[in-house]
Length: 305
Image 1 (cartoon, one colour):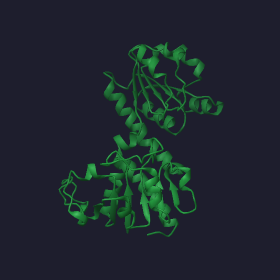
Image 2: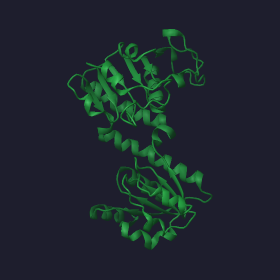
Image 3: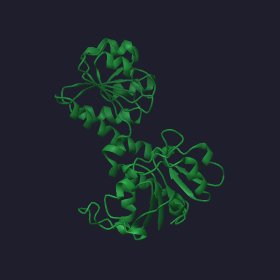
Image 4: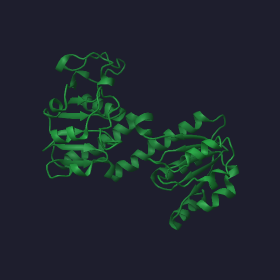
């Protein structure tokens, strides 16, 4: 099978390697900065200089193309980044030598099966067969696992004390919040979780965590050591931040604009870490495996091989 990959982070790199390992030909554009660590051999692929310790990957099946047009002409399956764009102008492509305009890609993939996360509405024009990874519930749930584990790794690295016997406040009881509560409790932390819905507060209590509303935070703020925010709207404001001790650690994993008044937190000398895109940065191989499962299932359902 031939596959085209345009832009993307380390998850897409690992995905390309996985497909090449299976004997597929992978045509890429916008990944040059990573793959040129090895030696490009024109259109015959990459020599196995790259990551020599990983001998199972056949890099001659990963081809670096000189243009979007060249890359997409080789296949009907085009995979791009997750998220697809951060500014609605350019494709999210941190390993590209040059920025890739969304419109330029759109013009080249008419009639193709296009797979990415957060596909723009203008791509739904009847000419492109879209598969939006961010709309896949299974992948969203699976993605929460590396996000949670990466968050805990950050918490361990940024503090001089154990998670065990720490007091951890998790804001939000969605997919990521649920896993975070579970993992922190398993590490011996006392877990407090804030939610708005009565049903969520009931489940928080049932799971053995301490349920809180946002109005409750100032009452317990001074005992909290670690705060993880998963809510993408402002929930930790001046009132809440004033209740925390100065050496509290806040990790905000919510998508922009996040849920913390960052300027006020800095004025209070509270350490805050904005941790976006954790799966792609911290656990790209696992994240790529999850993405591949979803893509392969979708392609099989459409009888595409």
